[in-house]
Amino acid sequence: MLSLTKVVLRMKTPALSTASHRVTNEKIFSLIEKNITPDSQILDLGSGSGYMTRKIFNWLQEHGQNSIGKITASDINRDAFKATEIDFVEADFGNKLPFDDHSFDLVFSVEVIEHLTNPYNFIEECKRVLKPGGTLILSTPNINNLQSKLRYLLTGMHALYEAPSVKPENAGRLCGHIMPLGLVYIAYALRRAGLLNIQIHGDKPKKSSVILYYALYPILKMSQSWQRAHSLRYDVSTFEENKELMASNSSFASLTSRSTILEAQ
Image (tube, rainbow, N blue to C red; front, side):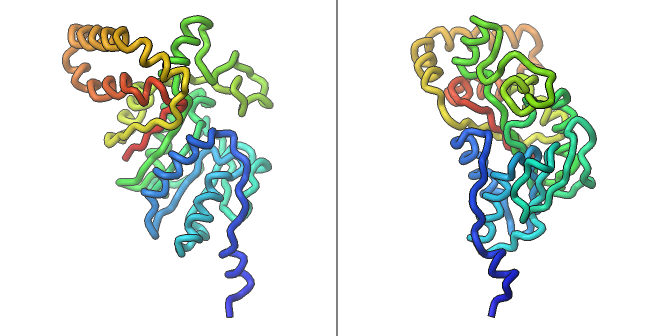
């Protein structure tokens, strides 16, 4: 006969609210799912209410895996975290993460780095707490999609970025988005930290960006040719270092997706 504790642990816990877009969450969860092994130690940096950590917890139970002690959630406000069945560590991501070196097989952070003043240091900290060969998954609003570029051209503000606020109560809102980093700069931060195997993913194509992509297709192709020629004139070695990233930066997914999602080891 099962003990009451085991029965409770096998019960599926209800979903929590999330500030991230549903399609973004689905894409990130698919990346998390493929990286989970029976021995994985998983860290959610910027867990909010605990939406994604609870989703992983339920997935582990549904697949007959031990879910206790395998997931750690972390954010700046313990009171906001509602997934009480999961270990939580309060942390300010502006400082060193409160975890030992090489502690986790999988670290993910959903829509967090745009809120930070030190995203490069944050990514280095993510690398520090990863075990060798571990995986880091990051997402951030995509300032490279054509709607965002057009908005920036006309207003000086990217899509999903409002005029910034220093008020603490606004930190989690769009006016708390203070670091608009594009794909090539996030990839630079990953490479700088020693995460060299980088895969780039999109999520939900924005209809307005898709329309702009096809309307501006000849101009986009000419611009890409000009950028390639410019980069070669500037420095051949830098061109070689970045040519795959620049190709990704000019891809349909990068020019239309709502979010930029990177997976790195």
